[in-house]
Image (cartoon, rainbow, N blue to C red):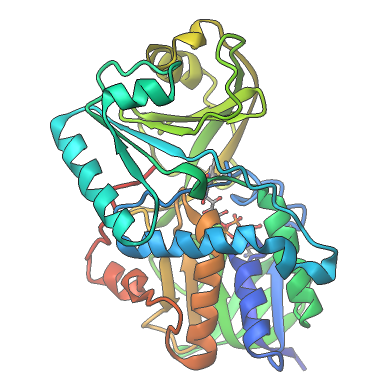
Length: 392
Ligand SMILES: Cc1cc2nc3c(=O)[nH]c(=O)nc-3n(C[C@H](O)[C@H](O)[C@H](O)COP(=O)(O)OP(=O)(O)OC[C@H]3O[C@@H](n4cnc5c(N)ncnc54)[C@H](O)[C@@H]3O)c2cc1C
Protein backbone atom coordinates (compact mmCIF):
# COMPACT_ATOMS: atom_id res chain seq x y z
CA UNK A 1 0.00 0.00 0.00
CA UNK A 2 1.24 3.52 -0.80
CA UNK A 3 2.59 5.58 2.08
CA UNK A 4 0.34 8.59 2.92
CA UNK A 5 1.22 12.23 3.64
CA UNK A 6 -1.16 15.11 4.30
CA UNK A 7 0.95 17.65 2.41
CA UNK A 8 3.59 16.79 -0.19
CA UNK A 9 5.89 19.65 -1.14
CA UNK A 10 7.67 19.24 -4.47
CA UNK A 11 11.02 21.03 -4.11
CA UNK A 12 13.08 21.86 -1.03
CA UNK A 13 14.48 25.27 -2.04
CA UNK A 14 13.58 28.39 -0.10
CA UNK A 15 9.87 28.26 -1.08
CA UNK A 16 9.45 24.60 -0.14
CA UNK A 17 11.36 25.08 3.14
CA UNK A 18 9.46 28.24 4.08
CA UNK A 19 6.06 26.66 3.34
CA UNK A 20 7.03 23.58 5.37
CA UNK A 21 8.19 25.74 8.28
CA UNK A 22 5.00 27.81 8.50
CA UNK A 23 2.66 24.88 7.87
CA UNK A 24 4.21 22.80 10.64
CA UNK A 25 4.14 25.82 12.95
CA UNK A 26 0.44 26.46 12.33
CA UNK A 27 -0.69 22.82 12.33
CA UNK A 28 1.82 20.47 13.99
CA UNK A 29 -0.43 17.45 13.43
CA UNK A 30 -0.03 17.55 9.65
CA UNK A 31 2.20 14.91 8.10
CA UNK A 32 4.31 17.04 5.81
CA UNK A 33 6.99 15.74 3.49
CA UNK A 34 9.31 17.80 1.27
CA UNK A 35 10.72 15.95 -1.75
CA UNK A 36 13.97 17.35 -3.11
CA UNK A 37 15.74 15.88 -6.15
CA UNK A 38 19.12 17.41 -5.18
CA UNK A 39 19.64 18.16 -1.50
CA UNK A 40 23.03 19.77 -2.27
CA UNK A 41 20.98 22.56 -3.95
CA UNK A 42 23.93 23.12 -6.27
CA UNK A 43 21.78 24.31 -9.19
CA UNK A 44 18.82 25.75 -7.31
CA UNK A 45 17.86 29.42 -7.63
CA UNK A 46 18.17 29.72 -3.88
CA UNK A 47 21.84 28.74 -3.83
CA UNK A 48 22.69 30.83 -6.91
CA UNK A 49 20.90 33.97 -5.75
CA UNK A 50 22.44 37.38 -5.17
CA UNK A 51 20.46 37.29 -1.90
CA UNK A 52 19.44 40.91 -1.58
CA UNK A 53 16.33 42.53 -0.15
CA UNK A 54 14.77 45.88 -0.94
CA UNK A 55 11.74 47.92 0.00
CA UNK A 56 11.84 49.73 -3.32
CA UNK A 57 9.02 48.10 -5.26
CA UNK A 58 6.24 49.95 -7.03
CA UNK A 59 3.37 47.69 -5.86
CA UNK A 60 2.41 48.29 -2.22
CA UNK A 61 1.91 44.60 -1.51
CA UNK A 62 5.51 43.87 -2.60
CA UNK A 63 6.74 46.53 -0.14
CA UNK A 64 4.76 44.86 2.66
CA UNK A 65 6.07 41.42 1.69
CA UNK A 66 9.67 42.65 1.83
CA UNK A 67 8.96 44.55 5.04
CA UNK A 68 8.03 41.27 6.68
CA UNK A 69 11.04 39.60 5.00
CA UNK A 70 13.35 42.17 6.55
CA UNK A 71 11.87 41.74 10.02
CA UNK A 72 12.15 37.95 9.68
CA UNK A 73 15.78 38.11 8.53
CA UNK A 74 16.73 40.54 11.30
CA UNK A 75 15.06 38.32 13.93
CA UNK A 76 16.32 35.06 12.51
CA UNK A 77 18.90 34.53 15.21
CA UNK A 78 16.26 34.56 17.96
CA UNK A 79 13.78 32.57 15.83
CA UNK A 80 16.44 29.87 15.54
CA UNK A 81 17.52 29.97 19.20
CA UNK A 82 16.80 26.23 19.45
CA UNK A 83 19.35 25.66 16.69
CA UNK A 84 21.96 27.77 18.46
CA UNK A 85 20.93 31.05 16.74
CA UNK A 86 21.56 31.46 12.99
CA UNK A 87 22.89 34.93 12.19
CA UNK A 88 22.20 35.77 8.54
CA UNK A 89 24.87 38.50 8.49
CA UNK A 90 22.48 41.10 7.09
CA UNK A 91 24.35 44.07 5.58
CA UNK A 92 22.05 47.07 5.39
CA UNK A 93 23.86 49.06 2.71
CA UNK A 94 20.65 50.03 0.92
CA UNK A 95 19.61 50.00 -2.73
CA UNK A 96 20.25 52.96 -4.99
CA UNK A 97 17.94 53.27 -8.00
CA UNK A 98 18.95 55.67 -10.77
CA UNK A 99 16.47 57.15 -13.26
CA UNK A 100 17.69 58.64 -16.55
CA UNK A 101 14.68 60.47 -17.99
CA UNK A 102 11.89 62.77 -16.86
CA UNK A 103 9.40 59.90 -16.99
CA UNK A 104 11.79 57.73 -15.04
CA UNK A 105 12.13 60.49 -12.43
CA UNK A 106 8.35 60.86 -12.14
CA UNK A 107 7.93 57.12 -11.69
CA UNK A 108 10.66 57.06 -9.06
CA UNK A 109 9.10 59.99 -7.17
CA UNK A 110 5.70 58.27 -7.19
CA UNK A 111 7.26 55.01 -5.97
CA UNK A 112 9.16 56.80 -3.18
CA UNK A 113 5.93 58.45 -1.95
CA UNK A 114 4.12 55.12 -1.92
CA UNK A 115 7.04 53.33 -0.17
CA UNK A 116 7.21 56.03 2.49
CA UNK A 117 3.46 55.68 2.98
CA UNK A 118 4.11 51.98 3.65
CA UNK A 119 6.67 52.85 6.32
CA UNK A 120 9.84 52.41 4.24
CA UNK A 121 12.55 55.03 4.68
CA UNK A 122 13.27 55.57 0.96
CA UNK A 123 14.50 59.01 -0.02
CA UNK A 124 14.59 60.72 -3.39
CA UNK A 125 17.97 62.26 -4.25
CA UNK A 126 18.74 64.91 -6.84
CA UNK A 127 21.93 64.52 -8.88
CA UNK A 128 23.73 66.94 -6.52
CA UNK A 129 22.58 65.07 -3.41
CA UNK A 130 23.65 61.81 -5.05
CA UNK A 131 27.19 63.13 -5.61
CA UNK A 132 27.40 64.46 -2.07
CA UNK A 133 26.37 61.09 -0.58
CA UNK A 134 28.43 58.93 -2.96
CA UNK A 135 31.27 61.09 -4.32
CA UNK A 136 32.75 58.16 -6.28
CA UNK A 137 29.59 57.90 -8.44
CA UNK A 138 29.16 59.99 -11.58
CA UNK A 139 25.69 61.50 -11.87
CA UNK A 140 25.99 61.85 -15.65
CA UNK A 141 22.57 61.31 -17.22
CA UNK A 142 20.83 60.83 -13.87
CA UNK A 143 17.48 62.64 -13.60
CA UNK A 144 16.69 61.39 -10.07
CA UNK A 145 17.87 58.71 -7.65
CA UNK A 146 16.25 56.94 -4.72
CA UNK A 147 18.06 55.42 -1.77
CA UNK A 148 16.58 52.99 0.72
CA UNK A 149 19.19 53.06 3.50
CA UNK A 150 19.58 50.40 6.15
CA UNK A 151 16.24 48.63 5.55
CA UNK A 152 17.72 47.16 2.35
CA UNK A 153 20.79 45.08 1.73
CA UNK A 154 21.88 41.46 1.49
CA UNK A 155 22.15 38.38 3.66
CA UNK A 156 23.16 34.73 3.84
CA UNK A 157 20.81 32.85 1.50
CA UNK A 158 21.94 29.35 2.46
CA UNK A 159 21.76 30.25 6.16
CA UNK A 160 18.10 31.17 5.66
CA UNK A 161 17.42 27.93 3.78
CA UNK A 162 19.23 25.71 6.28
CA UNK A 163 17.62 27.48 9.25
CA UNK A 164 14.08 27.17 7.88
CA UNK A 165 14.63 23.54 6.94
CA UNK A 166 16.06 22.66 10.36
CA UNK A 167 13.25 24.48 12.19
CA UNK A 168 10.70 22.63 10.05
CA UNK A 169 12.44 19.33 10.88
CA UNK A 170 12.22 20.14 14.59
CA UNK A 171 8.49 20.70 14.04
CA UNK A 172 8.15 17.21 12.53
CA UNK A 173 8.53 17.82 8.76
CA UNK A 174 10.30 15.09 6.77
CA UNK A 175 12.75 16.10 4.05
CA UNK A 176 13.43 13.32 1.57
CA UNK A 177 15.97 13.00 -1.19
CA UNK A 178 13.76 11.97 -4.13
CA UNK A 179 12.55 13.41 -7.39
CA UNK A 180 8.83 13.51 -8.04
CA UNK A 181 8.67 11.81 -11.45
CA UNK A 182 4.98 11.07 -11.89
CA UNK A 183 1.49 12.03 -10.81
CA UNK A 184 -1.63 9.89 -10.54
CA UNK A 185 -4.85 11.82 -10.84
CA UNK A 186 -8.54 11.19 -10.84
CA UNK A 187 -10.63 14.04 -12.20
CA UNK A 188 -9.67 17.23 -10.33
CA UNK A 189 -7.70 15.42 -7.62
CA UNK A 190 -4.06 14.38 -7.42
CA UNK A 191 -4.12 10.99 -5.73
CA UNK A 192 -0.46 10.09 -5.46
CA UNK A 193 3.05 11.01 -6.53
CA UNK A 194 5.61 8.59 -7.95
CA UNK A 195 9.18 9.05 -6.81
CA UNK A 196 12.51 8.43 -8.52
CA UNK A 197 13.30 5.66 -6.00
CA UNK A 198 10.26 3.67 -7.16
CA UNK A 199 7.99 4.54 -4.23
CA UNK A 200 4.50 5.90 -4.56
CA UNK A 201 3.14 8.32 -1.94
CA UNK A 202 -0.53 9.06 -1.62
CA UNK A 203 -1.20 12.73 -0.91
CA UNK A 204 -3.78 15.00 0.70
CA UNK A 205 -2.48 18.29 -0.72
CA UNK A 206 0.37 18.97 -3.15
CA UNK A 207 2.50 22.12 -3.24
CA UNK A 208 4.44 22.96 -6.40
CA UNK A 209 7.66 24.57 -5.09
CA UNK A 210 9.84 23.34 -7.96
CA UNK A 211 11.46 26.71 -8.81
CA UNK A 212 12.61 26.94 -12.44
CA UNK A 213 11.33 23.37 -12.97
CA UNK A 214 7.78 24.32 -11.95
CA UNK A 215 6.44 23.90 -15.50
CA UNK A 216 7.95 20.42 -15.81
CA UNK A 217 5.85 19.41 -12.82
CA UNK A 218 2.74 21.08 -14.28
CA UNK A 219 3.23 19.21 -17.55
CA UNK A 220 2.67 15.97 -15.64
CA UNK A 221 -0.84 17.36 -15.07
CA UNK A 222 -1.14 18.46 -18.71
CA UNK A 223 -1.24 22.09 -17.54
CA UNK A 224 0.38 24.97 -19.40
CA UNK A 225 2.27 27.16 -16.95
CA UNK A 226 3.97 30.49 -17.76
CA UNK A 227 7.15 29.88 -15.74
CA UNK A 228 10.40 29.18 -17.52
CA UNK A 229 14.09 28.99 -16.63
CA UNK A 230 15.93 32.15 -17.69
CA UNK A 231 19.69 32.33 -17.40
CA UNK A 232 21.50 35.02 -15.40
CA UNK A 233 25.31 35.23 -15.37
CA UNK A 234 26.68 36.90 -12.26
CA UNK A 235 30.24 38.28 -12.31
CA UNK A 236 32.46 38.89 -9.28
CA UNK A 237 34.77 41.75 -10.21
CA UNK A 238 37.78 43.29 -8.52
CA UNK A 239 38.18 46.99 -9.35
CA UNK A 240 41.17 48.19 -7.30
CA UNK A 241 40.21 51.86 -7.77
CA UNK A 242 36.60 51.29 -6.72
CA UNK A 243 36.75 49.36 -3.47
CA UNK A 244 33.67 50.52 -1.56
CA UNK A 245 32.43 47.77 0.78
CA UNK A 246 29.81 50.16 2.20
CA UNK A 247 28.32 50.99 -1.20
CA UNK A 248 24.62 50.32 -1.88
CA UNK A 249 23.22 47.93 -4.46
CA UNK A 250 23.12 50.11 -7.54
CA UNK A 251 20.32 49.66 -10.08
CA UNK A 252 21.18 51.80 -13.04
CA UNK A 253 18.67 52.77 -15.72
CA UNK A 254 21.40 51.78 -18.18
CA UNK A 255 20.41 48.17 -17.51
CA UNK A 256 22.68 46.40 -15.03
CA UNK A 257 22.98 46.09 -11.27
CA UNK A 258 26.06 45.99 -9.06
CA UNK A 259 26.73 45.64 -5.37
CA UNK A 260 29.80 45.19 -3.21
CA UNK A 261 30.81 41.76 -1.96
CA UNK A 262 33.61 42.37 0.51
CA UNK A 263 36.12 44.54 -1.35
CA UNK A 264 34.94 43.22 -4.75
CA UNK A 265 31.69 43.79 -6.66
CA UNK A 266 28.95 41.48 -7.89
CA UNK A 267 27.27 42.54 -11.11
CA UNK A 268 24.77 41.19 -13.66
CA UNK A 269 22.52 42.29 -16.47
CA UNK A 270 19.46 41.05 -18.31
CA UNK A 271 20.91 39.36 -21.41
CA UNK A 272 19.86 40.42 -24.90
CA UNK A 273 17.58 37.74 -26.39
CA UNK A 274 16.45 36.70 -22.94
CA UNK A 275 14.65 33.44 -23.67
CA UNK A 276 13.89 30.17 -21.91
CA UNK A 277 16.85 27.83 -21.49
CA UNK A 278 17.13 24.14 -20.77
CA UNK A 279 17.01 23.31 -17.04
CA UNK A 280 20.50 21.81 -17.36
CA UNK A 281 22.06 24.75 -19.26
CA UNK A 282 24.40 26.65 -16.95
CA UNK A 283 26.92 27.83 -19.57
CA UNK A 284 28.06 31.36 -18.74
CA UNK A 285 27.60 34.31 -21.10
CA UNK A 286 31.24 35.33 -20.59
CA UNK A 287 31.06 38.25 -22.99
CA UNK A 288 28.29 40.01 -21.04
CA UNK A 289 30.62 41.71 -18.59
CA UNK A 290 33.02 43.17 -21.13
CA UNK A 291 30.44 44.03 -23.80
CA UNK A 292 27.30 44.93 -21.90
CA UNK A 293 28.20 45.82 -18.32
CA UNK A 294 31.71 47.24 -18.06
CA UNK A 295 31.30 50.27 -20.38
CA UNK A 296 28.18 51.35 -18.46
CA UNK A 297 29.69 50.63 -15.06
CA UNK A 298 32.81 52.65 -15.92
CA UNK A 299 30.64 55.55 -17.04
CA UNK A 300 28.86 55.44 -13.67
CA UNK A 301 31.83 54.65 -11.42
CA UNK A 302 35.09 55.99 -12.89
CA UNK A 303 37.04 53.76 -10.47
CA UNK A 304 36.11 50.89 -12.79
CA UNK A 305 38.89 52.03 -15.14
CA UNK A 306 40.60 48.84 -14.04
CA UNK A 307 38.47 45.74 -13.51
CA UNK A 308 39.14 42.03 -13.41
CA UNK A 309 36.49 39.30 -13.37
CA UNK A 310 37.74 36.95 -10.72
CA UNK A 311 34.79 34.55 -10.68
CA UNK A 312 31.36 34.08 -12.16
CA UNK A 313 28.33 31.87 -11.72
CA UNK A 314 25.14 31.15 -13.60
CA UNK A 315 21.72 30.78 -12.05
CA UNK A 316 18.18 30.38 -13.36
CA UNK A 317 15.29 32.70 -12.60
CA UNK A 318 11.90 30.95 -12.45
CA UNK A 319 10.65 33.61 -14.83
CA UNK A 320 6.92 34.32 -14.93
CA UNK A 321 6.40 35.34 -18.55
CA UNK A 322 3.15 37.22 -17.85
CA UNK A 323 4.38 39.71 -15.26
CA UNK A 324 7.53 38.42 -13.54
CA UNK A 325 5.79 38.14 -10.22
CA UNK A 326 4.79 35.31 -7.94
CA UNK A 327 2.01 32.84 -8.63
CA UNK A 328 0.63 31.90 -5.24
CA UNK A 329 -2.41 30.00 -4.04
CA UNK A 330 -4.68 27.19 -5.16
CA UNK A 331 -4.83 26.17 -8.79
CA UNK A 332 -8.47 26.66 -9.82
CA UNK A 333 -8.47 23.52 -12.01
CA UNK A 334 -7.43 21.22 -9.15
CA UNK A 335 -8.91 20.45 -5.73
CA UNK A 336 -5.60 19.77 -3.99
CA UNK A 337 -2.85 21.64 -5.83
CA UNK A 338 -1.17 24.76 -4.44
CA UNK A 339 1.38 26.95 -6.19
CA UNK A 340 4.33 28.98 -4.94
CA UNK A 341 6.12 29.76 -8.18
CA UNK A 342 7.38 32.29 -10.71
CA UNK A 343 9.31 34.61 -8.39
CA UNK A 344 11.76 35.67 -11.11
CA UNK A 345 14.52 37.78 -9.49
CA UNK A 346 12.98 38.64 -6.12
CA UNK A 347 11.90 35.38 -4.50
CA UNK A 348 14.45 34.98 -1.77
CA UNK A 349 13.34 38.09 0.10
CA UNK A 350 9.68 37.14 -0.43
CA UNK A 351 10.02 33.60 0.89
CA UNK A 352 9.16 34.32 4.56
CA UNK A 353 5.90 36.14 3.72
CA UNK A 354 4.91 33.93 0.78
CA UNK A 355 5.50 30.66 2.66
CA UNK A 356 3.48 32.05 5.56
CA UNK A 357 0.65 33.11 3.22
CA UNK A 358 0.45 29.74 1.51
CA UNK A 359 0.41 27.97 4.88
CA UNK A 360 -2.42 30.26 6.06
CA UNK A 361 -4.40 29.43 2.96
CA UNK A 362 -3.87 25.73 3.49
CA UNK A 363 -4.62 25.67 7.21
CA UNK A 364 -7.25 28.42 7.56
CA UNK A 365 -8.68 28.55 4.04
CA UNK A 366 -7.79 32.23 3.59
CA UNK A 367 -4.89 34.69 3.97
CA UNK A 368 -4.61 36.13 7.47
CA UNK A 369 -1.49 38.30 7.79
CA UNK A 370 -1.15 39.81 4.33
CA UNK A 371 -3.74 39.59 1.58
CA UNK A 372 -1.78 37.89 -1.20
CA UNK A 373 -4.74 37.27 -3.49
CA UNK A 374 -3.27 39.57 -6.19
CA UNK A 375 -0.81 36.76 -6.96
CA UNK A 376 -3.50 34.20 -7.80
CA UNK A 377 -3.36 31.73 -10.67
CA UNK A 378 -6.72 33.18 -11.76
CA UNK A 379 -4.98 36.38 -12.91
CA UNK A 380 -2.74 34.28 -15.13
CA UNK A 381 -5.66 32.42 -16.67
CA UNK A 382 -7.48 35.73 -17.22
CA UNK A 383 -4.34 37.38 -18.64
CA UNK A 384 -4.40 40.21 -16.05
CA UNK A 385 -0.77 41.12 -15.33
CA UNK A 386 0.13 42.18 -11.80
CA UNK A 387 1.59 45.69 -12.00
CA UNK A 388 5.11 46.00 -10.62
CA UNK A 389 7.51 48.30 -12.45
CA UNK A 390 10.51 47.64 -10.23
CA UNK A 391 11.65 44.44 -11.93
CA UNK A 392 15.37 43.66 -11.88
C1 LIG B 1 21.28 34.95 -10.26
C2 LIG B 1 20.09 35.15 -9.36
C3 LIG B 1 20.04 36.26 -8.54
C4 LIG B 1 18.96 36.44 -7.68
N1 LIG B 1 18.97 37.49 -6.83
C5 LIG B 1 17.96 37.64 -5.93
C6 LIG B 1 18.00 38.66 -4.96
O1 LIG B 1 18.96 39.44 -4.90
N2 LIG B 1 16.96 38.78 -4.11
C7 LIG B 1 15.90 37.93 -4.14
O2 LIG B 1 14.98 38.09 -3.35
N3 LIG B 1 15.84 36.93 -5.05
C8 LIG B 1 16.83 36.76 -5.93
N4 LIG B 1 16.79 35.76 -6.84
C9 LIG B 1 15.59 34.93 -6.93
C10 LIG B 1 15.52 33.90 -5.84
O3 LIG B 1 16.79 33.32 -5.64
C11 LIG B 1 14.49 32.85 -6.20
O4 LIG B 1 13.25 33.50 -6.50
C12 LIG B 1 14.24 31.83 -5.09
O5 LIG B 1 15.44 31.30 -4.62
C13 LIG B 1 13.35 30.74 -5.63
O6 LIG B 1 13.28 29.69 -4.71
P1 LIG B 1 12.52 28.34 -5.08
O7 LIG B 1 12.47 27.53 -3.86
O8 LIG B 1 11.26 28.68 -5.79
O9 LIG B 1 13.44 27.67 -6.22
P2 LIG B 1 14.75 26.78 -6.07
O10 LIG B 1 15.69 27.35 -5.09
O11 LIG B 1 15.28 26.54 -7.44
O12 LIG B 1 14.20 25.44 -5.44
C14 LIG B 1 13.40 24.55 -6.17
C15 LIG B 1 13.84 23.16 -5.79
O13 LIG B 1 12.94 22.22 -6.34
C16 LIG B 1 13.66 21.05 -6.66
N5 LIG B 1 12.85 20.29 -7.63
C17 LIG B 1 12.42 20.69 -8.85
N6 LIG B 1 11.66 19.75 -9.43
C18 LIG B 1 11.58 18.72 -8.53
C19 LIG B 1 10.92 17.46 -8.55
N7 LIG B 1 10.18 17.05 -9.60
N8 LIG B 1 11.07 16.64 -7.48
C20 LIG B 1 11.81 17.04 -6.41
N9 LIG B 1 12.47 18.21 -6.34
C21 LIG B 1 12.33 19.06 -7.39
C22 LIG B 1 14.95 21.60 -7.23
O14 LIG B 1 15.99 20.64 -7.18
C23 LIG B 1 15.22 22.81 -6.35
O15 LIG B 1 16.09 22.52 -5.28
C24 LIG B 1 17.87 35.52 -7.69
C25 LIG B 1 17.93 34.39 -8.52
C26 LIG B 1 19.02 34.19 -9.33
C27 LIG B 1 19.10 32.95 -10.19
